[in-house]
Every structure is written in C-alpha cells, then in structure tokens.
Amino acid sequence: MFLNEDISRIIEMAWEDRTPFEGIDKAYGVNEKEVIKIMRKNLRLSSFILWRKRVRNRKTKHSAINSIQYLRHQSKIHNKYR
Image (cartoon, rainbow, N blue to C red; front, side):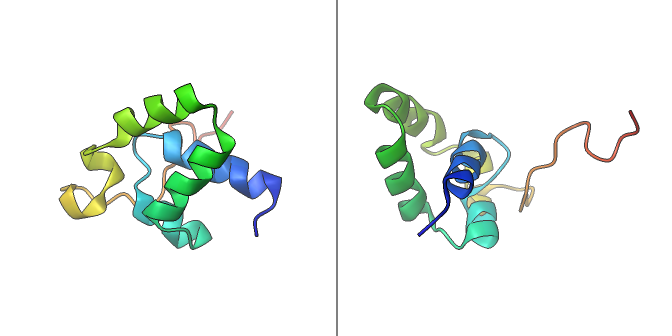
C-alpha cells in the first residue's frame, strides 16, 4: 500500500502536535482510523499507548474542534535563508 518512506512520514506527521489528522488525510488519503492502524502496526506497544494518550482529544489534531485551521505543518525554519 505505502512505501516505507511514506509510512515514516505519516508516523512523523501523526506525532507532530500541529498537524491534524485532516492534514494527513489530505496529503496521503489516510483517515484517522487508518492512521491509528498504521501507528499500532509500526510502533512498539508502549510508544503506541503514549501516542494515543497524547493525541486523544487534542484540539490541534482535530480541525473540527480547533479554532485555527492547520492543514499541514511547516517547520519554523521553512523558507528562511541559511
């Protein structure tokens, strides 16, 4: 279904606080339930449990309950001159 690099990026986006599930869906066509399945399959049990506690009811992970609409995350140094 996905390449290893795609799975790695989905996991990275899922761990980021400011990237909502809707942003992951827009980028990869994977809804929240599928992200949970990917995380469960590819993380250690303890890491998965920690992640679930972290994102459960987190406003920034759900655009519907977030006042600011984040559709994708950009790092603070994005588009800055080095």
